[in-house]
Amino acid sequence: MAAPNPVLTDPSCISSNSVPRGFTGRKEYPMKRVLPLLTGLIALAFSQSPQPAQPQRTISVTGTADVALVSDVCVMNMVINVNRQPDAASAFAEIKAQAKKLTEALKAQSVSPKDVESQGITLRADNRASDRSKVTFFDDYTVTQTLQVKVRDLAKIPAIFDAVLGTDAKVQSVAYTGENEERAYAKPRLDAIQQARDRAEAICQATGLKLIKPISVSERTGEDWGGGRYPDMSQAGQQGGLQLEPTVRKLSMSVSITYEVE
Image (cartoon, rainbow, N blue to C red):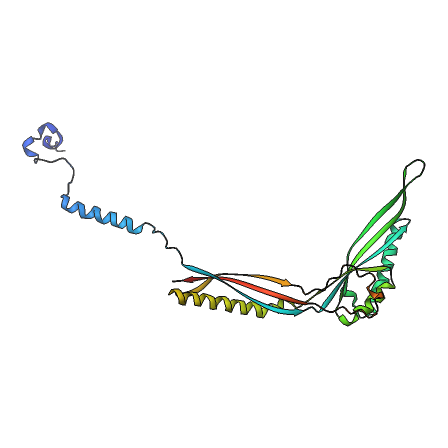
C-alpha cells in the first residue's frame, strides 16, 4: 500500500506561495451579479403578499306596495263556565256535555266541528269559611273551557249568536281575519321589487353609476285594520237585526334591496 503524500496531508508542507492571494476558502460572486438577484427576490415577495381589497360600491333602495284584503272568516272566542260541582269528575263530565251541546248548536248553523277548537280548560276549587271558627272548608269545583270558533259563512253570524244564547256558552270577542293572506301578498311583493329597482336605476342614471346586481334583499309586511273588533258580544244576539260587516284590511309590503354598482 502506497504511503500518503505528505504534501496533501500535512498543513506544514503547504507553502504560502502556493495559496492564491485573497483566497478564503469560500466561493465568492461579483457584486454586479448579486444585486440583480436580490432585487428580483424582493419584488417577487411583494408581488405574492395579499393586497388590500377594494371596498364594494353599493346603493340601497326600498319599494313599497299595498293591497286591500276583505276578511272572509269571522273568529269568535267563546267560554263555557260550569260551577258548583261536588268533585272534579262531575265537573269535567258537565263541561264536556256543555261543549257537545254548543258544538251541536253551531253545527246546525253550518259550522263544521273542525272549526271549533278548544283553547284550554281550567279547574278551580272553591272554598268557604265558617262563620264561627273562620276555618276554610272545601265547597265545590268550578271548571271553565275556552273555545275558538271560525265562521266561514258570514251571513250566519246573527243566527249563531242566537244559537249560542241557547247554551251555557258566552261569546267573549269577535274578530275578522283572512285565510288567503299569503297569496294576497304576492302582487304587492312584485310591485315593491319593481319600484325599488326603478329607484336604483334612477339614482344610477343621475350619478353616472352602473347598476350591476342585487347583493341583499329583505322584506317587511304590515297591515291596517279597518275595524271589526267588538269588546263585549255576550248580548249581541238580542239586538235584533244585528249585521256584522266583514272588515277590509290594508296589507303593506316593503322590500329593501342593496345593489352593487360601479
